Length: 234
Image 1 (cartoon, rainbow, N blue to C red):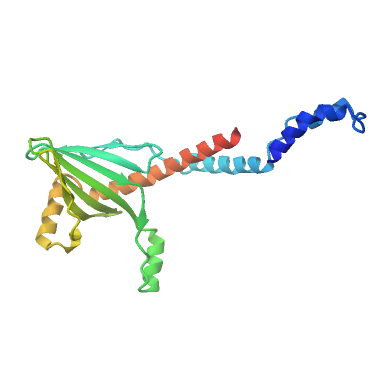
Image 2: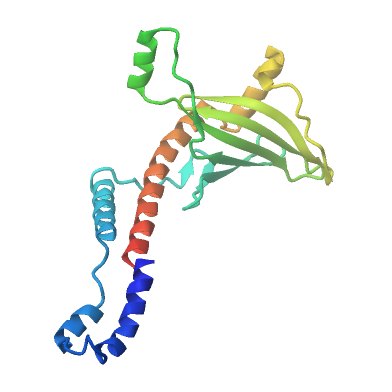
């Protein structure tokens, strides 16, 4: 609003200077008034803070080059997005295509409240962050069957939440969203976990994803700060 009023005043100034009582103003004063205003102090202060934060992140906490592979998986990073995709194939029998979509950190475990010592220990270790995974295992045979697993990845472990089929023989199946995985009997749980471990969807993958997302979080923050800096400079 202030810029609009100033612009309007500059447009009317030449007419005002030709009429009393402003005709005595010198051309020098008129040029000083019409000149482009300096950037607002707020913009300058914001730019200073942004550049200081960018320099700190780039010089002292820079993100590392993201790995393009992990074991048999290829990693597809998506700059600006809050998730990544991993792809692999498994050929222990009929060839299977494995796709893993992993979010960035989307939650954290609550701090224990049973005792002060456990709470202090949890705070010293840092937040126990959570990543959500959607694992899809599909076969390229005539059956065209697809299994989907909903998983939780913690810093040192991976837990299955749901398992359901998506397609078979070209038909789309309605997913069975029944009991949670932890409510199944121990034999079924062990069989599913072994099935995923054979396809390298295991605790090591969870650990890798947490390291990857820590680095991605730095890269995304640095990218975002530079976009804001470029906008403020305009």
